[in-house]
Image (cartoon, rainbow, N blue to C red; front, side, top):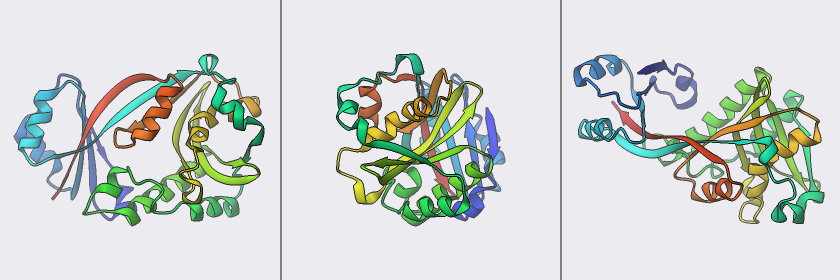
Amino acid sequence: MKVTDCNWEVINIGKQTIEISLDADEVLNPGMLKDIVKNYEYIVIKVPCGNVKSLLQLQDEGYKVIETQISLSKHYKDFDFQDKLLSLIRNEISFSTVNSHVHLEKVLSSITSNMFITDRVFYDSKLGPELSVNRYRNWIRSEFERESILYEIKYKNNPIGFTLLRFEQKYFHALLGGVYEKYQGEGLGILTIASGFLYCEENNIEVKKEYTAISSNNVPVMRLYNYFDFKIDKMQYVLIKHQ
């Protein structure tokens, strides 16, 4: 069991939050769990898929499943830079790296509450869209300050979305990305999936592999990652409870 006091969520969603991640075969002791979470208002528990005993036990105790988190990865060498769909728009794509707080705030102001409608905070009736977008904006700010790479994706020279990457040696984690609300529904979501590798290629950044995680609530994005043959590394049920 891994227990994290998510103190940053007080600013994001206004609640004392704890996140608990269980091991694959871990069986919970109900009394111990109650003692761990007693001082928190919002509880998030992640259970490895397959640990059905803990999943059912938590539901019996009032926890609700809100999503399955799917961790994915793909090697740079296996990415198809000549993909037929990318080829149709490749010459119209460019990237604008965010290097100033002015540009950062411009990106954040372009991120609206209806951009991430599959987010678990968005879905939660006790939290909702405004707290969801506030949480994302704060996350991006904190990652920018720790020197993660944030860039806007441009299509036909118009900023249509953004991607946030955290590099660790020769690997990168695609933390967050999205198409701005104005350009959603135009088939440009493929750019947020492919942009990490395209950005590294354009900027001569040597990388071996991309890691990312998506929600089972976001079926269109799941289809896109499947299209690019990303490998599923693990899956976790995510349960929540307010108290």
